[in-house]
Length: 291
Image (cartoon, rainbow, N blue to C red; front, side):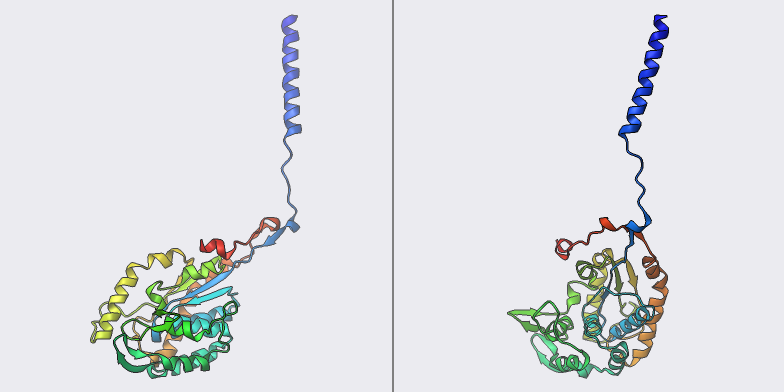
């Protein structure tokens, strides 16, 4: 009898502990559908340099605009800075394409040999004033023409730009494609557009082409940096165009369109409705991204 009483007591204690556990652990929380909100990605564009080949950026932008792809921010270096600034200023892609295809080297440069470079870029200021619709960054009291001229000052060819006690040269010297800058401006998805130079099989025939090839080698070895900050890389096929091949403008725009169209499935996949609890959405300040 004592053994039977002990067994009954043990069973009772087991059932009691189970009941306490069920009471202590709350049931799974069911979040109503209305609490979820679509997460809209912030797409940033990073446009690389390439001098005349920069016209290909227009083709990429035409496809993104045609497909109503929202652009959160845009950054550019060298020729990419001209296209990015013009687009951000409100200049239509048709006008940018028209100017780019009709552009010639002498529109932005003047041979003026000095110890710092072979070409002056004073003419670029007038060129930019015709192209851009506005000339100031929204959050900076600085004339936009100065940084664009500086970003296009290719070392050895263009004379550097003097600004506030500094000599400024082509932005591509520090970053071939400004993917990290787009990320710091708040982009959650960065599309980098790189414009490949002529194939190595093309033998340089003058001093400028030798310098250009040297920079090409250096940038190729350092490209892992900007690629690491890119979610998607678009590379228009402009390898057959020389650095001053402005006459190939329409072909380069078409190359940009083809490259962008090939990337559309991936971009549209980003824009598919994704659900996340609305209360948990927090944007990361640019100051934190920069640190």
